[in-house]
Length: 205
Image 1 (cartoon, one colour):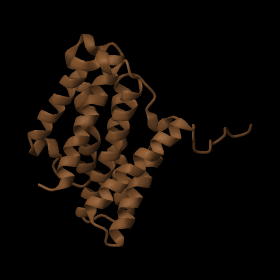
Image 2: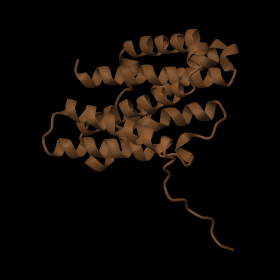
Image 3: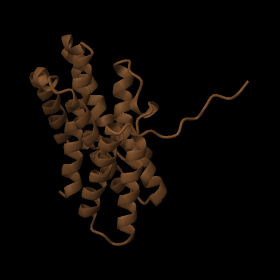
Image 4: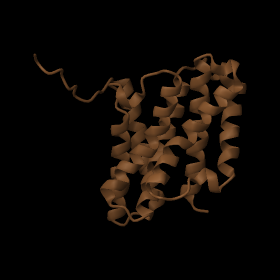
């Protein structure tokens, strides 16, 4: 098992926590199934869609460790939610770490399946953000990708860095670390300094 496998498991864990916390914050914690389901689809949703596009079996179907990791993440969120919610930035950090990890795993898996570098960058972003889109839809929130925050752009930047460094022969483990750090840094700075992309105005009558 290589480093990306453990990165994928860590990303799955972080997204499971993120999804379960989001459900808990919406008072869905009264139904443990609702919390567990939200955590599960947040954790595996983006990766499953990516794998279906790549015409391969989703990792959680083939490897029971993913189910164990999702279960651990949901239980962690359930038992420690009151402590976590005292620090409101915790959810943001879990979500940011999740998209960063899933981006680098997604782009590397895509490259290993022989897709073009540009397609790999897009699939890396896709696998990172779709879990959050599903999560926010389930809890009746506007998905982050549709808000003014820099979100998907951070994933694209990290994925592009990974592909560029690989082109120059840099080791994938170093690529993964630098890609994760770039995504994390962009998200942190964009929220702190309220960076946004240019708005597209309404057409004039």
